[in-house]
Image (cartoon, rainbow, N blue to C red):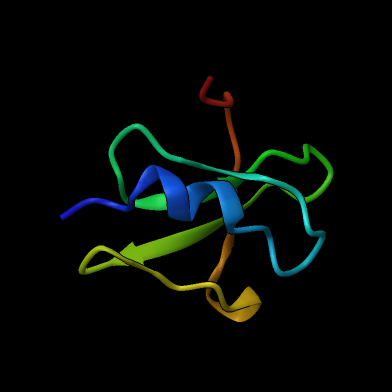
Length: 63
């Protein structure tokens, strides 16, 4: 079971409150704020929305 579109509409980055987007491979939720750019992991179809668990995204951004 993937993350529902309804849940994605209401989830926000805990650090900067920006919108999030599911990564193409479904492994995480990426903050759309380029200054923040944290990726929150998704484990067993559950987003882990803890700042300390997030990783800074590097490299090319996904659209």
